[in-house]
Length: 409
Ligand code: PHB
Image 1 (cartoon, helix red, strand yellow):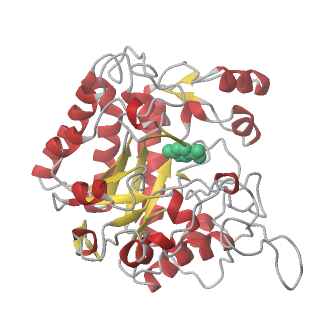
Image 2 (image 1 turned 120 degrees about the vertical axis):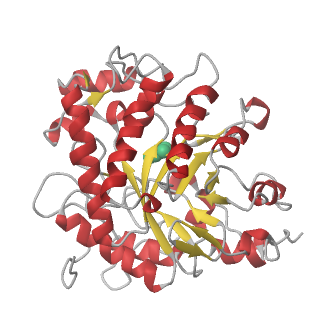
Image 3 (image 1 turned 60 degrees about the vertical axis):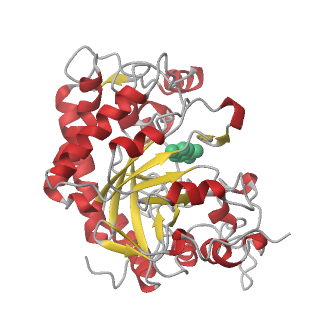
């Protein structure tokens, strides 16, 4: 049976987001893929690679589509995983610029997702890279991270007020400037899934007794200070955030409803919008997914309906939008307010031409294979149905740094 295409729906009506006009409301949301390359000069593997250049170019093929990059470290201190790209150095920024230029050459748009792992990091890698292991409070997300920290001899420490100031004014600020030099259309702060900014918002991960903890207002303070500072160095219309109000993963849990905390935060963003400082978009993870796991629909705890009641700007909602295929009633209902974008990730991995397929022939969608998501090789990345080795050399294709020649920042 052919699935009903979205061709004649609001999904394919143009929409203005920040300073750009998208041709359609389908967005590629971030997916960790571990294909960054090692820099020749240093420990770690954080350079955007040749495979990534090819990958994002393929997914930009439907003109006017917004892609959000995989989560990208804002600094070395933000890290704690191998194979993740960063945007902290000139070399990394130049490599990203090639990717951005390739996406723009296809007339599509690209947002950089800015990541700081915090307490979720692997302390062994932070140790290897000579970094601290920090969080709002000394609460390990689980036994595994605690064990790794003990093994590394690098205990989790509570961020001091000067350290918080530096995160905002150095780590994130430098990354935001670099993202603008690379030509990104948006700088999206990863504020979800228990990573550092999100871990300030929840009582289960924030037990501070200073002005950054203890009340709804105090738990929101770090995020608002971050957004306010970044708004002084890049236009707020180029800033975005991603929230996951319902995700109880990576040590985050809720004793009570998350709605009061997240409503306050969004209300503060709306107040800034009313004063001419409107963010480009707010992205929210739907309760239908919990990190990398799809929730049972019957077990879903809440709804993101409250988001659009408080936040009046552009919202991007993502999470299992294929559950009601072929009807796609959920997509049609969610975009009906005229200011909502819908995100896909897993199906964008296995369908570089996802947007055209959803438009014309959703029955041709190729199912993804999760086992290939996090592999270092090319199989399941740029060659979903093809080969993972180079025809000429017969060697497996692994990520190599993008040549930085002829890129002027
Ligand atoms: C992951 O790498 O598995 C991952 C990254 C970012 C998220 C969630 C999961 O927000």
